[in-house]
Every structure is written in C-alpha cells, then in structure tokens.
Image (cartoon, rainbow, N blue to C red):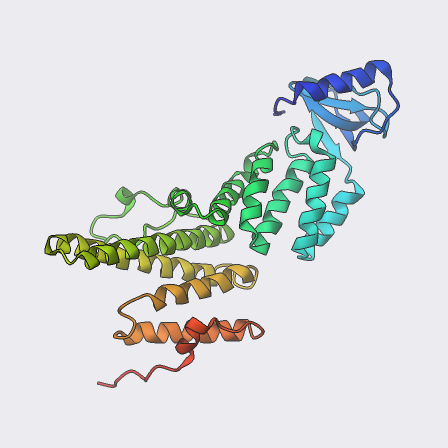
Length: 341
C-alpha cells in the first residue's frame, strides 16, 4: 500500500499523545481495517507515517499509535457527515458551495492526505473540479499546489495534469499551456504516408471529457500565441523594410495555420460533452468569434461570414440572458446567400 512521508513534527505530536494520554480531540475518520489473515479491526485514523497509518481506538483520536501497512490488507472508510454533505452539493452542481465544503474538509483532515486515495485527497481533487467549472482558474492554480500534496492513485493522474493546464490558463502562461496540450498529440511520424499534415496534429485516443478539455486548452493557447504573433508581424510591416518581406510572408502563413487550429479546437469544445460543460461551450463560442473578428479574410470569404453568423446566433440561442459582446453584434446580420452557379 503506497503512502508518502508525513511531516516528522506531526508524528512526534501523535506519539506524545499516545504516551501521555493528553485529553484533546484530533480530527479522525472511522475505518474498518482488514488484516492479511482476514481479521478485522475498527479504528479511527488520525494520520500516517512513512510505513503505515496512525490510528486510535477512540473517536477523539487520543492515544494514537502506529499501524504498519504490512498489517493492512484493505481499508474500508466510513463517510463523515461533512463528506456526504460536500458530495451532495457537488452532485447538485452547486459548485461554489461544494468548493468551499471540500476546502474545509481538506483543512480539517489534512493529516490524512498522505494515505492513498483518502477522503482529504479526493476532496482537494473535487474542489479543483468545482473551481474549473466556475471558471476560477487563477484560484485553481493556487489549489493545485495543495492537490500535489495529496497522495492520489494513477486513476486521478490524467485529470490532475489537466488541472495544472487550467491553472496555467488562470495565470496567463500560454506557452506552458501549449506544451501540456501538445503532450496529448500524436507524433508527426505517426501520420500515414501520403496524408497531408493537418493544421494541428491529431490528439491521441482520449475519453470525450478529456478530449474536450485538451482541445479547448490548445485552442486558447493557439489563440493567444497567435495574437502575439500578429503584433510582431505588424511591427515588422511598420518598419517598411523590403528585406523583411520573406519573414512577414512566412509568419503570416503560420498565423493563418494557428488560427485554423484554434477554430477547430474550439469546435470540439462546443460539441464534445455538449450540455454538460456549458461554460466551456460559451467560452468556445466567444473565442471562436474573437478569432474570426481578427481574420483579414473574413470580409472576402463567404464561408467565414456564414460561420461567424452561425456562431453569433448560436450564442444568443444558448444564452438568451447574456448579451452578445458589442464587438460581435455585427455578426448577427445575416450574410448574403451564396451565389448560384
């Protein structure tokens, strides 16, 4: 059974309680331990040490003693009331209240975080999910540091990595965000011979909720890095130096590719797990309109005009109580119908 090393100071305090019998309440979670020989023992877990857990036979957590992992076949936890209450808020999608409840739970039972997949570790994981759903990415970045202190098994690894990416979004670290998103791409050498390389490399096989997040995040990275590229191109053009013409042409082509990547990725953000991730759908719509608004080809290409119109109308249908930003109101005017041959 895996665990992390707990702070020696806490272990020292627990041992002091065990030897002196100091009467005080220590946060504990009731559990039933099954030993390798099949026997069971009911305990109150108050923490852990390098080779096992610290357990008490009292709900107050006093007189705690070591229980080595070598004597544990499995642990069956009893859910504290606070845990059930937090989960109820989470299941009802009351993200703000659930985040606060999980945060309080993690703080109260902090000393159990080193036990693999214990309630405090999962609480911090779910708090991060609540913050992601709320769009509080900067706050998520801070809580991600606490999440790293929890001992979670491999089953949580993929989403934990994505919380790091959402945190980069909150802190405006778009290059770091791009690196994480690109880690989910296939290798260019894996593209079959004769197939033209797409604007953005395809992603590896991912579950829809994961693919939705990765796509949206890569789209955000591409959009923001594209805006930086556009400013640098404008600076080159302003120099009016003919020697810069080849570089301007090359970088303009790259900017066009990056914009295509962003639009394709936002399209996935709008369609994958549609309805379950309304905030991502909304942000994908607005970011798509932002990309199209900066596209110099928009006034000339009917297909792009129709795309912008469709996205603007979809936004008003999905969010009737939220006005479309003023800079995109022009897209609500229907484009002329395509010419018939």
